[in-house]
Image (cartoon, one colour):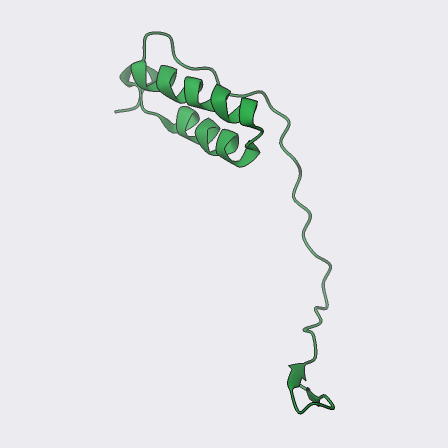
Length: 79
């Protein structure tokens, strides 16, 4: 690492350089998961997701999609 001294005596380090290009991850455009009919938890998560969409909170929508996808149901083969 090379240390550069400024005229004010502060120090700055030279930026790190990488030999490989950055990894580009694809955007996911799949549909939002559906709430399982008759499941109160899925219904509550779906309602909260709708509110987050209305507020424009894409991060929260994404988090709720993960919760809905991973919410266990015995008839899905999960316990």
